[in-house]
Length: 381
Image 1 (cartoon, rainbow, N blue to C red):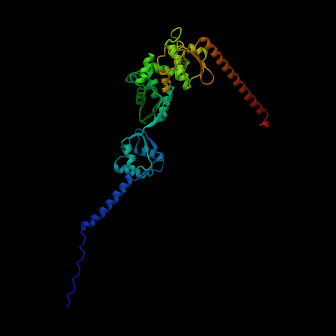
Image 2: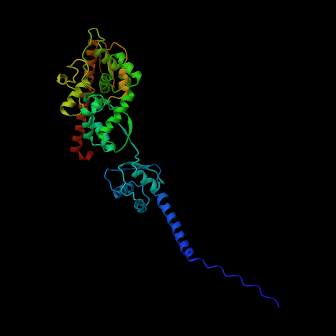
Image 3: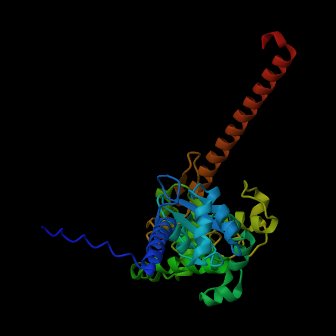
């Protein structure tokens, strides 16, 4: 009689610890995956170019999230807020301007904001202008108080720190394009731009100024006059040559006053706060320290912030015998060597202005008559 084979042993019962651990491990793995998804998965809308957001000083996390949402950056605000809560980064918001790329994660965006890793804003300072205009540019692009900038360029302590004075500081606000952080204050912005002014003065330019017998500040003052006088860039070296001939005594009778109309314009603008306007004969006798019809030599400082081309026009001025020039009606000037020649050119300019005034008056009268005729004859309309 055969003996039946023994029955297989039953599988061992899983230990109670194993039964407890397996679900916990599964939950932990799922939690890690969810956490990684919340932290590192994209949480932006889809867009091509980077989008900027400006977070003011003192902003709460909710205010920062509002800004990101309003800029069309956040994909899920809820997921962004949950991540901030889980990491404890809600109270670490730093002010500034931040660029966010499409596809950025919650971690990337919030880490950038909490560390204050700002992206600079590109601003352009225009040439040949006044502190109020540059202040308005900085207020628009950087949020700097416009009056604060005007006060900064008139701050004697700041000017002394930059080794200049308030008569010359604004003239050093070099017209150019700059990358500046949004949270920059007015004084820091002035220092930043002044640093680029110093870079402009290479050894070659300093040597040219010395060869003219002028300091860099004197070159800047002369350049500011050229800036307002010559609207055509190719004429600036010639205009600069005229003023240098007068200033340096390259005449038959030695040096003469600059007699530069822009300095009269500046004097009037300083006195009445108004815009630039046409000059009248009485204006040339306006008593003012910048009026070069009444003072000898250069005015106390620049009348604007000249462009690089005007500065280089002074440093590379044309050598000629011209002492006078007058507008020619085409945006340029007629240059002459003698006072007689100048008076002839001035009469031609005056006749041109009178003719243009007459034509303008005739045109206005014609338009007025046409308007009255249409009003009286409705059928003709």
